[in-house]
Image (cartoon, rainbow, N blue to C red):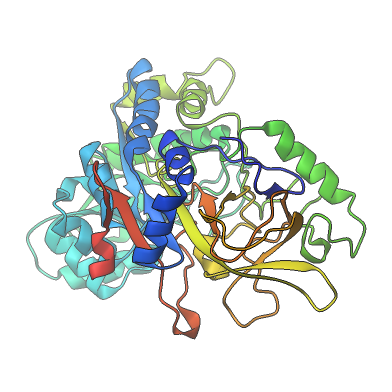
Amino acid sequence: MMNEKMYGTARLTARLEPWMEELLNSPTQCRELIERHGSPVNVHNFTALGSNVNDLRASAADHGIDFQIYFARKANKTMGAIDAAIREKCGLDVASLNELRQCLHRGVPAERIIVTAAVKSKELLQLAMKSRVTISIDNDDELRDLLDLAGDRGDDLIVALRLAISHTSIPPTRFGLLASQWLEVLSEIEPGARIRVAGIHFHLNGYEASARAHGITEALKVIQELRIMGHQPTFVDMGGGIPMSYLYSGSQWEEFWSILEQLPAGDETLTWKSDRLGVSGGAPTAGVYPYHQDLVRGHWLTRILDFEPESGSSSIASSLRAAQIQLRCEPGRSLLDGCGLTLAEVAFTKNRSDGVPLVGLHMNRTQCRSTSADFLVDPVLVHEDPVRRKRTPGSGFLVGAYCIEEELLLRRRFEFPLGVGARDIVAFPNTAGYLMHIVESASHQLPLAANVLWDGAAWQGDDIDKM
């Protein structure tokens, strides 16, 4: 779908699934969703999740390894996402009490759930113990809290140790403990304590395949030590961070950063107040998600499994097979690639006091945002049909509903060669993974966006909005 009604002054053209193109080519359907559910509305179709899962599984099967995917529920709060993961026989990675409750109520078996919350409440630990789900333990204090809550219960406590990887190529992390620290902690646990270490879990920033390979290698060495101590771990969980690509063109991605670096101070032809978005040396910094990536999902996993940590050593896949260890991962964004978009209605067009053009939307900046410096993907404009007001070609910035001077929905400037006006609809593509929900806010007592999903015949409200 060529988007010629709206695009960035430096284009970053979105990849679109066929269902997205069909919806965006129907102004009537888009208008009906806005009228029924308000603006913005988060629209989901989870058919792409199956192919994303299969891409990863095919790579694992080619290497003959035991492999399981645990969907990172924190990436999308809908109940439909849980149901889609269940249909694809995925496990669930949960990060809060409510996420665990919802997964259990939705019928996810306990053996298919892992609790990975960075900070775990007493109530979360109690439900996890009662339900017999695996708990990824982050530190000594957390393990002691768990033992205190367990008291004299007869069942083993099923835990995974969150390991802080010590390889020199991997930056320091706040998550987990070093291998030596974990082994010391376990050696100090009273003999009567019923701790069953089921596996090793780690969490890494970034998307480097080699970093995961080094992490798996270190985890396998810890497993050898745990077996000597009498534990019987069965898995290594390498967490999330599985790459995907939002954009069609790698050259657009590279050109954008090249142009941005050369932008004179105060020049707003490309970004609001010439915001550099973290550019350094003509490339984005760690504060920007890599919205274009060549190596994604299955091919990325193949790179890990073929990796040899040292010259002449066994590959990661061979080492996993030899140790009879299952490899697990916890993708969120990558599984939700192609599963959702956000529609928002244009409220007004006007100029800033110095003449810079603005397009106001009925949404706020937290409703399409993650921790990245900006969402660097071009939205799609759907004109009102029939058009009621005259439109003039031009450009401008998207601004939102919060009463803040810097309430920018996106910080890039956009071109509108056929004009834009009130009651048009702007679609933010591919937002299902994190962008809809991870930092959404109801400040000013504005309502959170409604969530709808395609049930095979019609758009239905998701059950999460009934809770």
